[in-house]
Length: 393
Image (cartoon, one colour):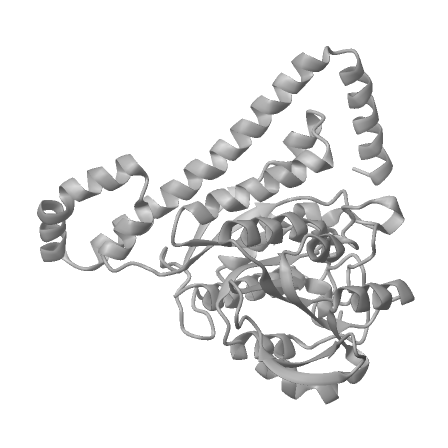
């Protein structure tokens, strides 16, 4: 459906809503939101149960026998108290497990809205028969202690009942928190346009109780104050993140389309922006994720210090906009910007990262422009696979 067509539908929905009593409309919206959050919550719990079950089955019949008789009553107690994470640890389960959460949102894009259709295409590519389930670091994705999937936030259904973006962003944040409540799950979010990073990062920071460091790979800084008047624009997500104090450091890598406002906002928030025009010079720092951070004191004296990403904060968040890659590697994006990173450049940065990755997202894949035999879907899937390896342990 065309952009104009979608706008028209929502316009008529608003007209219809105007004829409904506000209390009744609000009640209906609350029911849709509550149902959406309940779905995410129960899926997250279910995935932990499955993780426990498969682990038990994998350790042999004798251990099964011992588990039933030694841990049986404990199991009932844990289930009643919803402390599945404790049970996973008790039986030797994962410390951290990546859990896919789709956020099929595209209406905050300034150009094309195709990223709303990306989550199912990425999932399809992850499990495509053309490749195996192992990551480059040797982790097996078909092990539920490595990767689970709690499904999608029903973004379109929520919007169709008249919920505005303020509340929608809260729903996304609450969905992320529900996943994190089910230890050892950590959210690996499938976008969607880049506007989703704000509510996801907000949720992660609030749940962990403090700011995080962010590695942001993108052709654009996405730090406009309010692009085209939209504070939730995909081009403004990191302005909202920095304003909220949810990140201590923001490293932006792959930048090659940046305006004067993007640079000014970067200076305002102390963002470390690494542009492609100087990538060959910066490669050593980026591939070891040791960054030279420049600070200017009140006395105007300039000093440098070396600080590894994630040290002294709650962890590292990785946000990958697929257009960080050169379009030769990933043509299926809304904003094609030549001169980007190679796929191996990105993997080198990810593989060499030593920080504790607490969450991540892959955004801005546009299936409607992925015309080369699903090539970009496979690229996005590979990014998800390698991020899974960084998160799980």
